[in-house]
Image (cartoon, rainbow over all chains, first blue to last red; front, side):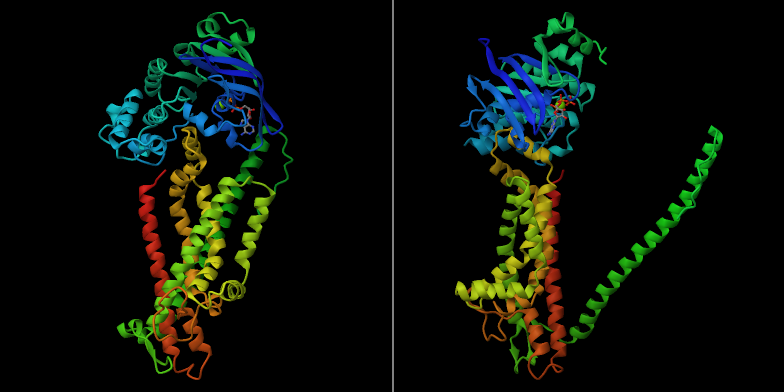
Length: 253
Length: 310
Ligand SMILES: Nc1ncnc2c1ncn2[C@@H]1O[C@H](COP(=O)(O)OP(=O)(O)OP(=O)(O)O)[C@@H](O)[C@H]1O
Ligand SMILES: [Mg+2]
């Protein structure tokens, strides 16, 4: 276990019913780094990501073996409330999914329910979160308009702001830019780079350039197994496993 | 049926010709089928509209004569052969509102349990079959059930309370069905988004799912409202009075009700023919009342729709 690891995945197997989606996953996610999860479609990247904040609990008939430690505590221990875990490990989904509420209420929704903040504190939190997500300038005059009217890229940044407003320690992102145009994508990549000062970010992506650009470490998965996990520079220049190289260079059959 | 062609062509060209021929023919056939189909749809729609129009016209034609300000604001007089029907209007309003107050919360809670909490499996399926059976139970059986449970056993007597509860149970399957549909139509991504923030399941349902399902729940419940207002059998033993000389003072009082009033005038007593206009007038008021309640529900719903949109 590395000293600065914030999440340790220890020999995890995961099943959807009888289907084994993850096999013997063992890896540590380091604090304040961006870790990219890559691999072909269906290899289990989303499954692993959703295991980290217990979103797989929502699916009937799933089973987890092994343990996942967050700050040293097993989040699958029987006495752990998944709701508490999700407060500390936020998530941004592949498709932007704002609530059908105003922009302001999208951000203030979680904090209002959980913390007894004054109106002006909430106002500040909304403003800060939107600034963090580089959306403030675009929406500051329309905070009371429906979030559904924003563009896809704006909606995704709103979802990031919404997650940030909960002050999580870790941010999980499942292909956050796959539905976006290059300009919005660039904005979100910049944002990720900025966020890693304060957050640990784990991001699933199919875009190799993106993984190379924004991540510090990269993990390559294939059919439910972790094939290679190393510094991004190393993975993209001199991977240890031939399989990894084939995938990265697109020579994959 | 479209004519069939034996596919015994040999070369590429022959095969292509054969297929093109089939295409031509099947296009004409499809066009023909479409015409028949749309024709049938049009005719059925026409039959429905004509029937509905016929009923409404019949009621208006026969009932409009007695409608007056006095008719809807005065008590009946002369053994109900003259005067107004005000207590029956008030009574039906009370019973309808009562039935909704019972049926809506209970139905929504049941639907939330069935769609959001219960593990989807055998037990839920059995419960759902049970609810569907309940929807098919004749209303007079509900009346007897209400008589046994609320009027006699719980000693509510024949009262607004007993009638509202009975009608509430009567419309429960409708409301559960509507609420289930509405809850299911709320995108799963909303639930995920909320839960991923660390919001509890209960709060997610209460803050996100339910508000977005409400317009749909209202739509389905409108049917229930109409049924609650119009049924005679369930209130016959549980709430309805033949005649009251004053308005109910509490929920433990009996009330007159529009459908029961029609029933009484049309079947009992010696003045059946003489009170025909009053019967039709009462029916007209009942129809107007139900449509009025529906209209209010529709307005509320479209207002909510405007606010929530995805
Ligand atoms: N809810 C589910 N029920 C059953 N099997 C599932 C479920 N979700 C995913 N799987 C299966 O688990 C495996 C891993 O799926 P997962 O979604 O984690 O892949 P992924 O790596 O994220 O793929 P992609 O890049 O296409 O998003 C796949 O074989 C998939 O079919
Ligand atoms: Mg995925």
